[in-house]
Length: 560
Image 1 (cartoon, rainbow, N blue to C red):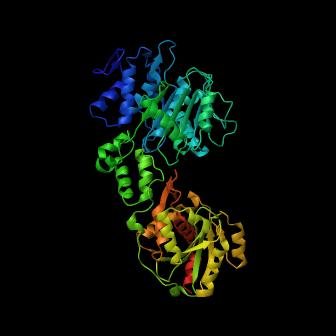
Image 2: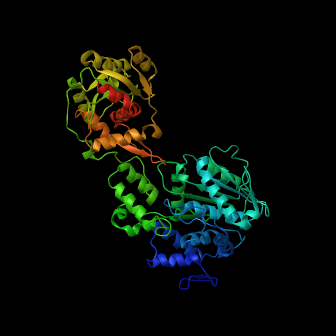
Image 3: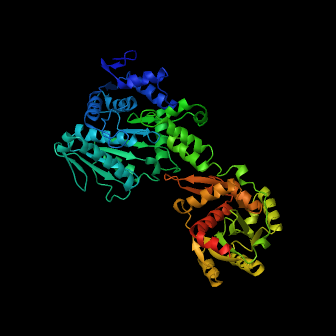
């Protein structure tokens, strides 16, 4: 028996119903996805297949609040008093039981929550609850995509354990993990670096930062290890991220189908703190609570206000904020730059740089993409970067273009902005010849040329044979994030003069942004638009990488 009016189930106070009623009354604001899950749970109270027993949940809540303390500022040393949403989550997960077996209904939970809402502390409390309150001989793992992230949870658990004299006396830690001396349970780490992921016997698994996982290797190994357990626990706790079609995307697709009753799977608890739209974020600060249930308690409102302020002027910051602070999935479907950022009609004559020095950059492609080559030029006491460029394309590629693109390409060829290679492949010797012509015609010396690795082996040898120094630039986030951020900033400030080249403008318009968990950016093609080339944007990034690595030397050369 339960009473919505009194927030009781079987005559005892229910945090789940208290949470539900405060949401329904508008006292607490959450998104529609969590409301749907709570409504499904209330319906389950009337389902004859289940009975409700909150004894296990109450035991763990009392344990956490009595024995666990915060180990990080600004709450260092204070008792870990659970927020209402945390108590409701614990109660919902542990309290529904199958009437015929008495076993726990939920085996898996997905908790999607924005950053800075106490996720790591909550993980630690849940793990310690199982470590000391669960079945004896339990194997508990805290896992993540990489060892460092798995260590964050593990270390937080251990710090909490050490803070309590009674818990420390009943347990022990060594290089392999933590051991409960009373009930023989263990806590260990599991990551992509862990050997022998299979063959384990896991009772309770926490997967942290699931958004970074491209594959299901870790998740699947935990699930398989739990196949002999009657009441296994697997909890996925994460923010949204930037990995497309990764492990989290697949888990959320399935979870939302369960939530919407398209798939019947009573074993999964879908607890999603999500926004109902992006628009509400900018228009209604009260909506921020939908993805931030600890806002005002743990996460500061002023923090989000600062993030919003920065995000309004920076595309990469905006994408990162939307994913991490509001759980709005970001992909590379949006353009990297605004139209006003790209437009710059300023031009220059290469004669202005006669007998000067330049930085080179090449994006090479044998068949499908354009090949692009450019030089970066500067003048003494002038912050602007001047780009002179040339594009290359195989003759056969022209035949595959749409009618619209063919007309544009023909015009670019007529203007001398694009060189056509006979046959099916780009002839990279034409790229070399272009660099050589800059010295022969203008005395411009390219002191270092960056290139991507694609199809470059023989071209590099040819360039070096002419006396050019070439540097390979790896096309990844870590290498090119800072260069691309500088390109973006300089474009917005009109400090990049690309001679009003229409191919450069076209490539910049086609470029999208891919952001990783470290807030590093990489310029990529828009998904599903392989015909929209970005090679000119890529060579800008390569040129800036060489510039940043050799800035002092290069600036000294142009002052001569």
